[in-house]
Image 1 (tube, helix red, strand yellow):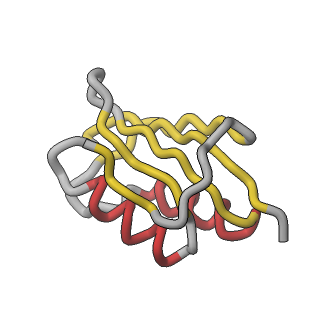
Image 2 (cartoon, one colour; image 1 turned 90 degrees about the vertical axis):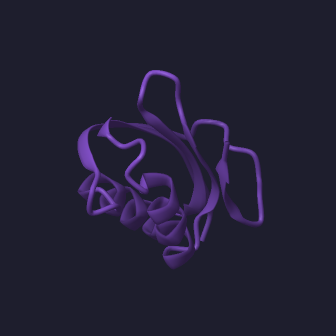
Length: 93
């Protein structure tokens, strides 16, 4: 199955609530590689690479808010955006 990419930007209460940590665990669950990082505006940006089915499952899980303390307001998805190839999914500080 072909690899697909997406840049995902999540707004809401997504910083300081374990969002990046739980996103990393979802990435391993759905075999997604890429990165997750906090942005200065209070949102979180995820760069993801996976097969189509796994990427969709990952995005659906992100929309639910992977951290119990998080509150997701909006999820912006830019499919096909350039995401560098990686073997892992990492939190970027």
